[in-house]
Image 1 (cartoon, rainbow, N blue to C red):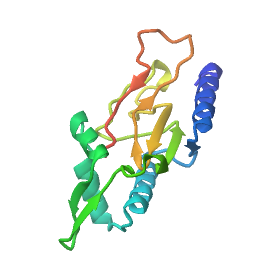
Image 2: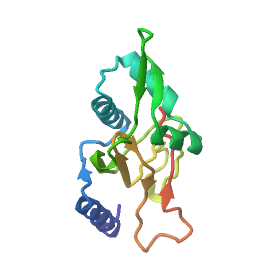
Image 3: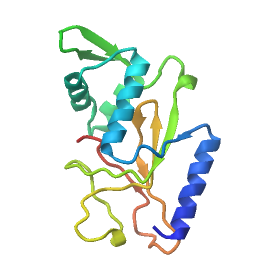
Length: 167
């Protein structure tokens, strides 16, 4: 990353921190992102999921369907636990929006079969990982990554990348 891109990235993070986002330098890959999601989900819904339940939950909620994802974000959802009991859950606090927790992360590396791979030309050959510059977390839910560029990059190069969090 060039120093100009680094400066743009730092400025964006500071602006988001000014809007009460917490900067999370500890979230840097898919595993730490999932762990953060799990912790926030369990806290929000006052529940502890088994590893199997958490894996099934991810399979159910991660979707490329924007409308299904929006519906899941705005409402209560149902999930059947391993013991057969129902779990009604929220992905974000829909009762008290002001109590949602906002976080920003940067330089997240996601290396999955379901990630779209929009790599800059200087990413290096054979690098299969997608690495957005910034992502925002609302409650436990990651939002689309934002790619920052200096003015040296071509205007035709995408500045925003959306990718599946599945994997």
